[in-house]
Length: 606
Image 1 (tube, rainbow, N blue to C red):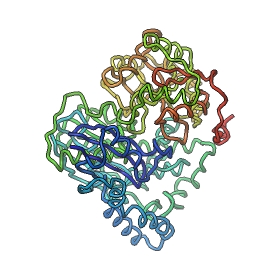
Image 2: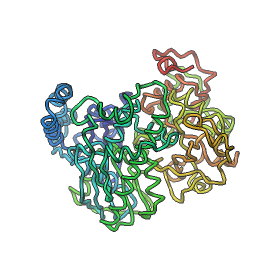
Image 3: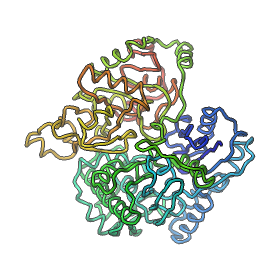
Protein backbone atom coordinates (compact mmCIF):
# COMPACT_ATOMS: atom_id res chain seq x y z
CA UNK A 1 0.00 0.00 0.00
CA UNK A 2 1.60 3.25 -1.18
CA UNK A 3 0.36 6.58 0.17
CA UNK A 4 1.65 9.99 -0.89
CA UNK A 5 1.13 12.99 1.39
CA UNK A 6 1.54 16.52 0.06
CA UNK A 7 1.73 19.96 1.70
CA UNK A 8 1.98 23.16 -0.34
CA UNK A 9 1.03 26.78 -1.04
CA UNK A 10 1.66 28.41 2.34
CA UNK A 11 5.26 27.79 3.35
CA UNK A 12 7.62 24.78 3.54
CA UNK A 13 5.98 22.64 0.88
CA UNK A 14 6.85 18.96 1.21
CA UNK A 15 6.00 15.40 0.24
CA UNK A 16 5.99 12.12 2.14
CA UNK A 17 5.69 8.52 1.02
CA UNK A 18 4.22 5.95 3.42
CA UNK A 19 4.49 2.30 2.37
CA UNK A 20 2.48 -0.27 4.33
CA UNK A 21 2.34 2.08 7.28
CA UNK A 22 6.09 2.80 7.34
CA UNK A 23 7.49 6.24 6.56
CA UNK A 24 9.60 5.48 3.50
CA UNK A 25 10.66 8.98 2.44
CA UNK A 26 9.95 12.64 3.16
CA UNK A 27 11.52 15.88 1.97
CA UNK A 28 10.90 19.61 1.67
CA UNK A 29 10.72 21.26 -1.73
CA UNK A 30 13.19 23.99 -0.70
CA UNK A 31 16.06 21.49 -0.62
CA UNK A 32 15.72 20.87 -4.37
CA UNK A 33 14.84 24.36 -5.62
CA UNK A 34 17.32 26.09 -3.23
CA UNK A 35 14.55 28.58 -2.39
CA UNK A 36 14.21 28.82 1.39
CA UNK A 37 10.71 27.98 2.69
CA UNK A 38 9.57 27.30 -0.88
CA UNK A 39 5.75 27.17 -0.86
CA UNK A 40 5.24 26.07 -4.47
CA UNK A 41 3.84 22.72 -5.48
CA UNK A 42 6.49 20.18 -4.35
CA UNK A 43 7.05 18.32 -7.62
CA UNK A 44 10.76 17.77 -6.89
CA UNK A 45 10.05 16.44 -3.40
CA UNK A 46 7.34 14.16 -4.82
CA UNK A 47 9.70 12.78 -7.45
CA UNK A 48 12.38 12.22 -4.83
CA UNK A 49 9.98 10.29 -2.60
CA UNK A 50 8.76 8.15 -5.49
CA UNK A 51 12.33 7.43 -6.53
CA UNK A 52 13.28 6.36 -3.01
CA UNK A 53 10.25 4.11 -2.91
CA UNK A 54 11.05 2.61 -6.32
CA UNK A 55 7.66 3.75 -7.64
CA UNK A 56 5.94 5.61 -10.40
CA UNK A 57 2.76 7.58 -9.78
CA UNK A 58 0.79 4.68 -11.30
CA UNK A 59 1.72 2.49 -8.30
CA UNK A 60 0.27 4.92 -5.74
CA UNK A 61 -2.87 3.74 -3.95
CA UNK A 62 -3.80 7.02 -2.26
CA UNK A 63 -2.78 10.68 -2.53
CA UNK A 64 -3.73 13.16 0.18
CA UNK A 65 -3.32 16.91 0.63
CA UNK A 66 -2.65 18.23 4.13
CA UNK A 67 -5.49 20.75 4.39
CA UNK A 68 -8.77 21.80 2.79
CA UNK A 69 -8.14 24.68 0.36
CA UNK A 70 -11.80 25.65 -0.14
CA UNK A 71 -12.36 25.91 3.61
CA UNK A 72 -9.23 28.06 3.92
CA UNK A 73 -10.46 30.25 1.05
CA UNK A 74 -13.80 30.63 2.82
CA UNK A 75 -12.00 31.88 5.92
CA UNK A 76 -9.98 34.39 3.90
CA UNK A 77 -13.07 35.77 2.13
CA UNK A 78 -15.07 36.02 5.35
CA UNK A 79 -12.18 37.82 7.05
CA UNK A 80 -11.82 40.35 4.25
CA UNK A 81 -15.57 41.03 4.30
CA UNK A 82 -15.49 41.50 8.07
CA UNK A 83 -12.63 44.02 7.92
CA UNK A 84 -13.60 45.76 4.63
CA UNK A 85 -12.62 48.20 3.31
CA UNK A 86 -9.46 48.13 5.46
CA UNK A 87 -7.96 45.03 3.84
CA UNK A 88 -8.43 45.98 0.18
CA UNK A 89 -4.67 46.16 -0.53
CA UNK A 90 -4.07 42.73 0.95
CA UNK A 91 -7.14 41.33 -0.84
CA UNK A 92 -5.91 42.57 -4.23
CA UNK A 93 -2.50 41.03 -3.59
CA UNK A 94 -3.79 37.67 -2.35
CA UNK A 95 -6.57 36.90 -4.82
CA UNK A 96 -4.49 36.30 -7.99
CA UNK A 97 -2.49 33.60 -6.23
CA UNK A 98 -5.66 31.88 -5.04
CA UNK A 99 -7.44 32.12 -8.37
CA UNK A 100 -4.43 30.97 -10.41
CA UNK A 101 -3.01 28.33 -8.06
CA UNK A 102 -4.34 27.56 -4.59
CA UNK A 103 -7.96 26.86 -5.53
CA UNK A 104 -6.81 24.35 -8.15
CA UNK A 105 -4.93 22.04 -5.83
CA UNK A 106 -6.69 18.92 -7.10
CA UNK A 107 -5.92 19.83 -10.72
CA UNK A 108 -2.29 20.60 -9.80
CA UNK A 109 -1.93 17.18 -8.24
CA UNK A 110 -3.59 15.43 -11.18
CA UNK A 111 -1.34 17.28 -13.64
CA UNK A 112 1.81 16.41 -11.67
CA UNK A 113 0.80 12.76 -11.21
CA UNK A 114 -0.82 12.14 -14.56
CA UNK A 115 -0.40 8.36 -14.28
CA UNK A 116 -2.25 8.28 -10.94
CA UNK A 117 -5.86 7.26 -11.42
CA UNK A 118 -7.12 7.13 -7.84
CA UNK A 119 -8.97 9.63 -5.64
CA UNK A 120 -7.28 12.68 -4.17
CA UNK A 121 -8.09 13.10 -0.49
CA UNK A 122 -7.98 16.23 1.66
CA UNK A 123 -7.38 16.28 5.41
CA UNK A 124 -8.13 19.11 7.84
CA UNK A 125 -4.92 21.05 8.54
CA UNK A 126 -4.77 20.42 12.29
CA UNK A 127 -5.81 16.80 11.84
CA UNK A 128 -2.67 16.43 9.70
CA UNK A 129 -0.60 18.11 12.43
CA UNK A 130 -2.13 15.87 15.10
CA UNK A 131 -1.46 12.73 13.05
CA UNK A 132 2.15 13.80 12.47
CA UNK A 133 2.58 14.19 16.22
CA UNK A 134 0.86 11.07 17.51
CA UNK A 135 1.24 8.28 14.96
CA UNK A 136 5.07 8.31 14.76
CA UNK A 137 5.38 8.68 18.54
CA UNK A 138 6.39 5.87 20.92
CA UNK A 139 3.08 6.14 22.84
CA UNK A 140 0.08 3.84 22.72
CA UNK A 141 -2.04 6.76 23.88
CA UNK A 142 -1.35 10.44 24.46
CA UNK A 143 -2.83 13.92 24.73
CA UNK A 144 -2.17 16.01 21.62
CA UNK A 145 -1.70 19.76 21.28
CA UNK A 146 -1.28 21.42 17.90
CA UNK A 147 -0.72 25.15 17.60
CA UNK A 148 0.48 27.30 14.70
CA UNK A 149 -0.40 30.47 12.79
CA UNK A 150 -3.58 29.18 11.18
CA UNK A 151 -4.84 26.23 9.18
CA UNK A 152 -8.27 26.61 7.63
CA UNK A 153 -9.95 28.24 10.65
CA UNK A 154 -8.21 26.42 13.48
CA UNK A 155 -5.09 27.88 15.10
CA UNK A 156 -4.87 25.61 18.15
CA UNK A 157 -6.34 22.20 18.91
CA UNK A 158 -6.32 19.82 21.84
CA UNK A 159 -7.04 16.15 21.35
CA UNK A 160 -6.41 12.58 22.39
CA UNK A 161 -4.85 9.70 20.50
CA UNK A 162 -5.26 6.03 21.30
CA UNK A 163 -3.92 3.19 19.17
CA UNK A 164 -4.96 4.03 15.58
CA UNK A 165 -7.45 6.79 16.33
CA UNK A 166 -7.26 10.53 17.00
CA UNK A 167 -10.05 12.70 18.37
CA UNK A 168 -9.67 16.49 18.37
CA UNK A 169 -11.68 17.67 21.37
CA UNK A 170 -11.28 21.45 21.44
CA UNK A 171 -10.20 24.18 19.03
CA UNK A 172 -9.34 27.89 18.95
CA UNK A 173 -10.13 29.69 15.71
CA UNK A 174 -8.62 32.51 13.66
CA UNK A 175 -7.80 35.34 14.22
CA UNK A 176 -6.95 34.23 17.77
CA UNK A 177 -3.58 32.57 17.29
CA UNK A 178 -0.56 32.02 19.50
CA UNK A 179 1.56 31.59 16.38
CA UNK A 180 0.37 34.93 15.02
CA UNK A 181 1.13 36.63 18.35
CA UNK A 182 4.71 35.34 18.22
CA UNK A 183 5.01 36.27 14.54
CA UNK A 184 3.79 39.78 15.32
CA UNK A 185 6.77 40.23 17.64
CA UNK A 186 9.02 38.59 15.06
CA UNK A 187 7.90 41.28 12.62
CA UNK A 188 8.12 44.10 15.18
CA UNK A 189 11.66 43.19 16.22
CA UNK A 190 12.80 43.30 12.58
CA UNK A 191 12.89 39.63 11.59
CA UNK A 192 11.09 37.83 8.78
CA UNK A 193 7.73 36.24 9.60
CA UNK A 194 7.52 32.45 9.11
CA UNK A 195 11.32 32.35 9.13
CA UNK A 196 12.73 34.48 11.95
CA UNK A 197 10.68 33.19 14.91
CA UNK A 198 13.58 31.02 16.07
CA UNK A 199 15.77 34.13 16.08
CA UNK A 200 13.37 35.74 18.55
CA UNK A 201 13.63 32.60 20.70
CA UNK A 202 17.45 32.78 20.55
CA UNK A 203 17.44 36.50 21.35
CA UNK A 204 15.16 36.16 24.39
CA UNK A 205 17.83 35.22 26.98
CA UNK A 206 19.63 38.53 26.35
CA UNK A 207 16.59 40.47 27.58
CA UNK A 208 14.28 40.89 30.54
CA UNK A 209 10.48 40.28 30.44
CA UNK A 210 9.71 43.98 30.84
CA UNK A 211 6.79 43.88 28.42
CA UNK A 212 5.20 40.58 29.47
CA UNK A 213 2.51 42.17 31.62
CA UNK A 214 1.80 44.72 28.88
CA UNK A 215 1.21 41.84 26.45
CA UNK A 216 -1.13 40.13 28.93
CA UNK A 217 -2.97 43.37 29.74
CA UNK A 218 -3.50 44.62 26.18
CA UNK A 219 -2.80 41.96 23.54
CA UNK A 220 -3.96 38.57 24.79
CA UNK A 221 -6.68 37.49 27.21
CA UNK A 222 -5.15 34.25 28.48
CA UNK A 223 -7.38 31.96 30.55
CA UNK A 224 -6.31 29.39 33.14
CA UNK A 225 -7.12 26.50 30.79
CA UNK A 226 -4.79 27.92 28.10
CA UNK A 227 -7.59 29.23 25.89
CA UNK A 228 -7.12 32.79 24.74
CA UNK A 229 -8.34 35.67 22.61
CA UNK A 230 -6.24 38.32 20.91
CA UNK A 231 -7.22 41.97 21.03
CA UNK A 232 -7.36 42.60 17.30
CA UNK A 233 -7.28 46.37 17.81
CA UNK A 234 -3.47 45.99 17.98
CA UNK A 235 -2.90 43.69 15.00
CA UNK A 236 -3.03 44.06 11.23
CA UNK A 237 -2.52 40.47 10.04
CA UNK A 238 -6.20 39.54 9.64
CA UNK A 239 -6.64 41.63 6.50
CA UNK A 240 -3.57 43.84 6.15
CA UNK A 241 -0.13 43.54 4.64
CA UNK A 242 1.73 43.82 7.97
CA UNK A 243 1.50 42.01 11.30
CA UNK A 244 1.11 45.02 13.59
CA UNK A 245 -0.49 48.47 13.42
CA UNK A 246 -0.01 51.98 14.78
CA UNK A 247 -1.77 51.17 18.04
CA UNK A 248 0.66 48.29 18.62
CA UNK A 249 3.60 50.55 17.80
CA UNK A 250 2.36 53.25 20.20
CA UNK A 251 1.96 50.66 22.98
CA UNK A 252 5.58 49.56 22.63
CA UNK A 253 7.06 52.98 22.04
CA UNK A 254 7.81 53.29 18.35
CA UNK A 255 7.76 51.71 14.88
CA UNK A 256 9.12 48.22 14.10
CA UNK A 257 12.89 47.78 13.93
CA UNK A 258 14.16 47.85 10.36
CA UNK A 259 15.74 44.60 9.21
CA UNK A 260 19.55 44.36 9.53
CA UNK A 261 19.80 47.46 11.78
CA UNK A 262 21.44 47.31 15.20
CA UNK A 263 19.61 45.24 17.79
CA UNK A 264 18.86 47.31 20.88
CA UNK A 265 18.03 46.22 24.42
CA UNK A 266 14.38 46.94 23.60
CA UNK A 267 14.25 44.14 21.00
CA UNK A 268 15.89 41.74 23.46
CA UNK A 269 13.33 42.62 26.15
CA UNK A 270 10.46 42.24 23.68
CA UNK A 271 11.77 38.81 22.62
CA UNK A 272 12.04 37.68 26.25
CA UNK A 273 8.56 39.00 27.01
CA UNK A 274 6.71 37.26 24.16
CA UNK A 275 8.70 34.08 24.82
CA UNK A 276 7.56 34.05 28.46
CA UNK A 277 3.94 34.70 27.53
CA UNK A 278 4.11 31.87 24.98
CA UNK A 279 5.57 29.52 27.60
CA UNK A 280 2.81 30.51 30.02
CA UNK A 281 0.12 29.77 27.43
CA UNK A 282 1.59 26.41 26.45
CA UNK A 283 2.00 25.34 30.08
CA UNK A 284 -1.64 26.13 30.76
CA UNK A 285 -2.68 24.21 27.64
CA UNK A 286 -0.60 21.23 28.75
CA UNK A 287 -2.10 21.21 32.24
CA UNK A 288 -5.60 21.44 30.78
CA UNK A 289 -4.88 18.63 28.31
CA UNK A 290 -3.70 16.49 31.22
CA UNK A 291 -6.84 17.25 33.23
CA UNK A 292 -9.15 16.59 30.27
CA UNK A 293 -7.58 13.38 28.97
CA UNK A 294 -5.76 11.89 31.97
CA UNK A 295 -3.03 10.84 29.54
CA UNK A 296 0.48 10.03 30.76
CA UNK A 297 2.07 11.36 27.57
CA UNK A 298 1.84 14.42 25.36
CA UNK A 299 2.46 14.89 21.62
CA UNK A 300 3.07 18.28 20.01
CA UNK A 301 3.02 19.60 16.44
CA UNK A 302 2.34 22.81 14.55
CA UNK A 303 4.87 25.58 14.04
CA UNK A 304 4.78 26.67 17.70
CA UNK A 305 5.99 23.18 18.68
CA UNK A 306 9.37 24.16 17.18
CA UNK A 307 9.79 26.42 20.23
CA UNK A 308 12.19 24.01 21.92
CA UNK A 309 12.64 26.32 24.94
CA UNK A 310 8.93 26.02 25.75
CA UNK A 311 9.06 22.25 25.08
CA UNK A 312 11.85 21.87 27.63
CA UNK A 313 9.86 23.80 30.24
CA UNK A 314 6.77 21.61 29.68
CA UNK A 315 8.95 18.54 30.16
CA UNK A 316 10.61 19.84 33.34
CA UNK A 317 7.24 20.75 34.87
CA UNK A 318 6.49 16.98 35.00
CA UNK A 319 2.90 17.46 33.86
CA UNK A 320 3.34 14.34 31.72
CA UNK A 321 5.70 11.40 32.10
CA UNK A 322 7.12 12.12 28.64
CA UNK A 323 6.47 14.27 25.58
CA UNK A 324 7.19 13.77 21.88
CA UNK A 325 7.38 16.50 19.23
CA UNK A 326 7.19 15.96 15.48
CA UNK A 327 10.66 17.02 14.17
CA UNK A 328 9.06 18.65 11.12
CA UNK A 329 6.43 20.29 13.28
CA UNK A 330 5.47 23.01 10.77
CA UNK A 331 3.65 22.71 7.47
CA UNK A 332 6.23 20.31 6.00
CA UNK A 333 5.26 17.74 8.62
CA UNK A 334 1.65 18.05 7.53
CA UNK A 335 2.49 15.95 4.47
CA UNK A 336 3.72 13.18 6.73
CA UNK A 337 0.74 13.45 9.07
CA UNK A 338 -1.76 13.39 6.21
CA UNK A 339 -0.21 10.23 4.74
CA UNK A 340 -0.28 8.47 8.12
CA UNK A 341 -3.87 9.61 8.66
CA UNK A 342 -4.86 7.71 5.51
CA UNK A 343 -3.17 4.54 6.77
CA UNK A 344 -4.73 4.66 10.24
CA UNK A 345 -7.86 6.86 10.19
CA UNK A 346 -9.09 6.28 6.64
CA UNK A 347 -8.05 2.64 6.16
CA UNK A 348 -8.29 1.56 9.81
CA UNK A 349 -5.01 -0.32 9.94
CA UNK A 350 -3.67 -1.57 13.25
CA UNK A 351 -0.93 0.47 14.92
CA UNK A 352 1.87 -1.31 16.78
CA UNK A 353 3.99 0.66 19.24
CA UNK A 354 7.44 -0.31 20.45
CA UNK A 355 7.92 1.15 23.92
CA UNK A 356 10.59 3.85 23.99
CA UNK A 357 11.07 3.83 20.22
CA UNK A 358 9.35 6.11 17.69
CA UNK A 359 9.01 5.33 13.97
CA UNK A 360 10.49 8.59 12.70
CA UNK A 361 13.82 6.80 11.97
CA UNK A 362 15.90 9.66 13.29
CA UNK A 363 14.11 11.83 10.68
CA UNK A 364 16.70 10.65 8.12
CA UNK A 365 14.05 10.40 5.43
CA UNK A 366 15.47 12.38 2.50
CA UNK A 367 17.59 11.32 -0.48
CA UNK A 368 20.97 9.63 -0.07
CA UNK A 369 23.96 9.76 -2.41
CA UNK A 370 26.00 6.59 -2.75
CA UNK A 371 29.81 6.53 -2.90
CA UNK A 372 29.83 5.98 -6.65
CA UNK A 373 27.68 9.09 -7.19
CA UNK A 374 30.00 11.18 -5.00
CA UNK A 375 33.05 9.77 -6.79
CA UNK A 376 31.54 10.67 -10.15
CA UNK A 377 30.77 14.21 -8.96
CA UNK A 378 34.33 14.78 -7.72
CA UNK A 379 35.92 13.33 -10.84
CA UNK A 380 33.66 15.18 -13.28
CA UNK A 381 34.45 18.52 -11.65
CA UNK A 382 38.14 17.68 -11.05
CA UNK A 383 37.83 18.52 -7.37
CA UNK A 384 40.95 17.75 -5.27
CA UNK A 385 40.21 15.22 -2.56
CA UNK A 386 41.63 12.40 -0.49
CA UNK A 387 39.76 9.15 0.01
CA UNK A 388 39.99 8.17 3.66
CA UNK A 389 40.57 4.60 4.69
CA UNK A 390 37.69 3.36 6.82
CA UNK A 391 40.13 2.21 9.52
CA UNK A 392 41.56 5.73 9.96
CA UNK A 393 38.66 7.94 8.93
CA UNK A 394 37.20 8.67 12.37
CA UNK A 395 40.59 9.16 14.01
CA UNK A 396 41.58 11.69 11.35
CA UNK A 397 38.33 13.61 11.56
CA UNK A 398 38.28 13.64 15.36
CA UNK A 399 41.80 15.13 15.32
CA UNK A 400 40.72 17.82 12.87
CA UNK A 401 37.77 18.81 15.08
CA UNK A 402 39.94 18.77 18.22
CA UNK A 403 42.32 21.20 16.48
CA UNK A 404 39.44 23.69 16.08
CA UNK A 405 38.82 23.07 12.39
CA UNK A 406 35.28 23.54 11.07
CA UNK A 407 34.07 20.56 9.03
CA UNK A 408 31.19 20.19 6.60
CA UNK A 409 29.67 16.73 7.12
CA UNK A 410 27.67 15.18 4.25
CA UNK A 411 26.65 11.58 4.98
CA UNK A 412 23.68 9.28 4.44
CA UNK A 413 20.09 10.42 4.04
CA UNK A 414 19.10 14.07 4.28
CA UNK A 415 17.10 15.08 7.34
CA UNK A 416 13.38 15.89 7.17
CA UNK A 417 12.51 19.03 9.11
CA UNK A 418 14.38 22.25 9.90
CA UNK A 419 17.17 20.72 12.00
CA UNK A 420 20.44 19.21 10.81
CA UNK A 421 20.89 15.97 12.73
CA UNK A 422 24.17 14.57 11.47
CA UNK A 423 23.31 14.01 7.83
CA UNK A 424 23.88 17.52 6.47
CA UNK A 425 25.76 19.24 9.32
CA UNK A 426 28.64 21.61 10.01
CA UNK A 427 30.72 20.40 12.96
CA UNK A 428 33.13 21.98 15.41
CA UNK A 429 34.72 21.56 18.84
CA UNK A 430 32.27 22.37 21.63
CA UNK A 431 35.20 23.06 24.02
CA UNK A 432 36.53 25.92 21.87
CA UNK A 433 36.15 29.46 23.23
CA UNK A 434 36.15 30.97 19.73
CA UNK A 435 34.02 28.43 17.83
CA UNK A 436 30.66 30.23 18.20
CA UNK A 437 32.00 33.51 16.86
CA UNK A 438 33.93 31.78 14.07
CA UNK A 439 30.93 29.77 12.92
CA UNK A 440 28.49 32.68 13.07
CA UNK A 441 30.61 35.26 11.27
CA UNK A 442 32.82 33.19 8.95
CA UNK A 443 30.70 30.14 8.17
CA UNK A 444 27.01 30.91 8.62
CA UNK A 445 27.19 34.66 7.93
CA UNK A 446 24.50 35.36 10.49
CA UNK A 447 23.82 37.35 13.65
CA UNK A 448 26.44 36.94 16.38
CA UNK A 449 23.88 36.31 19.14
CA UNK A 450 22.63 33.06 17.59
CA UNK A 451 23.45 29.96 19.68
CA UNK A 452 24.69 26.63 18.37
CA UNK A 453 23.42 23.21 19.32
CA UNK A 454 25.35 20.28 20.76
CA UNK A 455 25.32 16.75 19.43
CA UNK A 456 26.03 14.50 22.41
CA UNK A 457 26.34 10.74 22.67
CA UNK A 458 23.04 9.46 24.04
CA UNK A 459 24.75 7.49 26.78
CA UNK A 460 26.47 10.65 28.12
CA UNK A 461 23.72 13.26 27.84
CA UNK A 462 23.03 13.34 31.59
CA UNK A 463 26.73 13.93 32.32
CA UNK A 464 26.53 17.31 30.63
CA UNK A 465 22.89 18.46 30.68
CA UNK A 466 19.96 18.54 33.09
CA UNK A 467 17.94 16.00 31.15
CA UNK A 468 17.30 12.33 31.79
CA UNK A 469 16.00 11.17 28.42
CA UNK A 470 16.61 11.13 24.70
CA UNK A 471 16.34 14.24 22.54
CA UNK A 472 17.24 12.94 19.07
CA UNK A 473 15.52 15.72 17.09
CA UNK A 474 16.93 18.87 18.72
CA UNK A 475 13.43 19.73 19.98
CA UNK A 476 14.29 20.27 23.65
CA UNK A 477 16.34 22.90 25.45
CA UNK A 478 17.87 21.96 28.81
CA UNK A 479 20.37 23.60 31.19
CA UNK A 480 24.04 22.68 31.19
CA UNK A 481 24.79 20.83 34.45
CA UNK A 482 25.83 23.06 37.35
CA UNK A 483 29.18 21.34 37.81
CA UNK A 484 30.12 22.19 34.22
CA UNK A 485 29.18 25.84 34.53
CA UNK A 486 31.87 28.43 35.14
CA UNK A 487 31.53 30.77 38.10
CA UNK A 488 31.20 34.32 36.74
CA UNK A 489 32.64 37.46 38.31
CA UNK A 490 30.34 40.19 39.68
CA UNK A 491 31.25 42.34 36.69
CA UNK A 492 30.24 39.59 34.25
CA UNK A 493 27.00 38.91 36.11
CA UNK A 494 25.98 42.55 35.79
CA UNK A 495 26.46 42.72 32.02
CA UNK A 496 23.39 43.54 29.93
CA UNK A 497 22.18 42.61 26.48
CA UNK A 498 24.63 41.59 23.80
CA UNK A 499 27.56 42.23 26.17
CA UNK A 500 26.68 38.88 27.73
CA UNK A 501 27.71 37.10 24.52
CA UNK A 502 31.47 36.80 25.01
CA UNK A 503 31.41 35.58 28.62
CA UNK A 504 32.80 32.06 29.09
CA UNK A 505 30.03 30.06 30.77
CA UNK A 506 31.01 26.38 30.86
CA UNK A 507 33.60 23.82 29.79
CA UNK A 508 31.63 23.46 26.53
CA UNK A 509 31.32 27.20 25.77
CA UNK A 510 30.62 26.91 22.04
CA UNK A 511 27.17 25.45 22.70
CA UNK A 512 26.28 27.10 26.03
CA UNK A 513 23.80 29.94 25.56
CA UNK A 514 23.83 33.05 27.75
CA UNK A 515 21.21 31.51 30.09
CA UNK A 516 23.34 28.34 30.48
CA UNK A 517 21.01 26.37 28.22
CA UNK A 518 21.52 24.28 25.09
CA UNK A 519 19.27 22.85 22.36
CA UNK A 520 20.22 19.20 22.61
CA UNK A 521 20.55 16.44 20.06
CA UNK A 522 21.27 13.01 21.47
CA UNK A 523 23.08 10.80 18.94
CA UNK A 524 22.21 7.13 18.83
CA UNK A 525 24.31 4.28 17.52
CA UNK A 526 21.27 2.55 16.02
CA UNK A 527 19.84 5.45 13.99
CA UNK A 528 23.08 7.11 12.83
CA UNK A 529 26.02 4.75 13.44
CA UNK A 530 28.55 6.78 11.42
CA UNK A 531 27.85 10.06 13.21
CA UNK A 532 27.82 8.25 16.56
CA UNK A 533 31.19 6.68 15.73
CA UNK A 534 32.71 10.08 14.90
CA UNK A 535 31.60 11.63 18.21
CA UNK A 536 32.60 8.49 20.11
CA UNK A 537 36.10 8.67 18.61
CA UNK A 538 36.29 12.37 19.51
CA UNK A 539 35.24 11.42 23.05
CA UNK A 540 37.96 8.76 23.34
CA UNK A 541 40.59 11.27 22.25
CA UNK A 542 39.42 14.29 24.24
CA UNK A 543 37.22 13.01 27.06
CA UNK A 544 34.36 15.14 25.66
CA UNK A 545 31.34 13.37 24.05
CA UNK A 546 29.93 16.63 22.66
CA UNK A 547 30.48 18.44 19.33
CA UNK A 548 28.95 21.57 17.84
CA UNK A 549 26.34 20.73 15.22
CA UNK A 550 24.78 23.39 13.01
CA UNK A 551 22.91 23.03 9.75
CA UNK A 552 24.94 22.77 6.53
CA UNK A 553 23.89 26.05 4.90
CA UNK A 554 24.56 29.76 5.02
CA UNK A 555 22.07 32.33 6.17
CA UNK A 556 19.19 32.70 3.73
CA UNK A 557 19.70 29.31 2.05
CA UNK A 558 18.12 25.90 2.74
CA UNK A 559 20.18 23.03 4.11
CA UNK A 560 22.22 21.40 1.36
CA UNK A 561 20.80 18.40 -0.45
CA UNK A 562 23.31 17.26 -3.10
CA UNK A 563 27.11 16.95 -3.21
CA UNK A 564 27.14 20.02 -5.48
CA UNK A 565 25.15 22.03 -2.91
CA UNK A 566 27.61 20.95 -0.24
CA UNK A 567 30.65 21.89 -2.30
CA UNK A 568 29.26 25.32 -3.16
CA UNK A 569 28.50 26.06 0.49
CA UNK A 570 31.97 24.82 1.48
CA UNK A 571 33.66 27.09 -1.03
CA UNK A 572 31.52 30.16 -0.26
CA UNK A 573 32.49 30.07 3.41
CA UNK A 574 35.61 29.80 5.53
CA UNK A 575 34.97 26.17 6.38
CA UNK A 576 38.25 24.25 6.71
CA UNK A 577 37.29 20.78 5.47
CA UNK A 578 34.44 19.00 3.73
CA UNK A 579 33.61 15.33 4.18
CA UNK A 580 31.60 13.85 1.28
CA UNK A 581 31.05 10.18 2.04
CA UNK A 582 34.57 8.71 2.41
CA UNK A 583 36.25 11.70 0.74
CA UNK A 584 38.00 14.54 2.57
CA UNK A 585 38.34 17.91 0.84
CA UNK A 586 40.88 20.38 2.25
CA UNK A 587 40.05 24.04 1.57
CA UNK A 588 43.75 24.79 0.98
CA UNK A 589 43.83 22.32 -1.92
CA UNK A 590 40.83 23.70 -3.77
CA UNK A 591 41.12 25.78 -6.96
CA UNK A 592 39.82 29.33 -7.05
CA UNK A 593 36.04 29.30 -6.78
CA UNK A 594 34.03 31.61 -9.04
CA UNK A 595 30.64 32.43 -7.63
CA UNK A 596 28.18 35.17 -8.45
CA UNK A 597 27.24 35.70 -4.81
CA UNK A 598 29.43 37.74 -2.45
CA UNK A 599 28.06 36.64 0.91
CA UNK A 600 30.28 38.97 2.92
CA UNK A 601 29.08 42.02 0.99
CA UNK A 602 25.43 40.99 1.22
CA UNK A 603 25.55 40.62 4.99
CA UNK A 604 27.96 43.55 5.52
CA UNK A 605 30.55 41.50 7.38
CA UNK A 606 34.16 42.58 7.93
